[in-house]
Image (tube, rainbow, N blue to C red):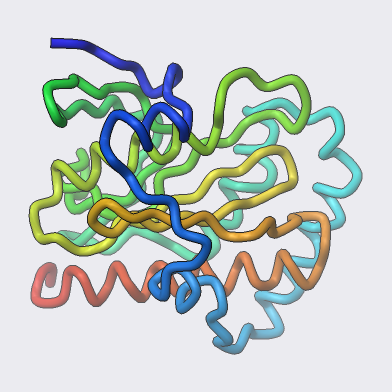
Length: 216
């Protein structure tokens, strides 16, 4: 049985190996990334500060800088910890057997059921790379993690993902054999950054709906 690491995955390889169908636009993705929920004054203040900070540093920040000073704070602001329902986890090893291939690797960040350790992953796999000179196919790596999440989650519902390359955010959905990737959202652009925050708030709402009846 062949073993393939996320780091070696490209979109072309995944399309061919797993008979995936890239879509220009899936309704599930469009509904997610076009969410129009209102942001509070506090939200706007946070985004303005974060955007200005990223604009000054994006050219030279490495992966850890991006995680600590931009990506992490935004995810923390939204808050993906719901006791006994779901939590956010970082640097998690994942593995699944799919079509006679062992697909495995480490995901930078995921949301899954569980509290102290992930149980069933279902949302928001993130691959964040330095804006310049990163190696490999970052979108392919993110999609590979989403495929494993789909295999581990047997409810048949869509898997949501996110890939961040420097200041650029791409949101992704996987539904059955079809996947779609959003247009770029630029974290240094105030309006784009506000929409990124809306998308993450919408993601949390999906998490709440998906785990309804669980928790306290």
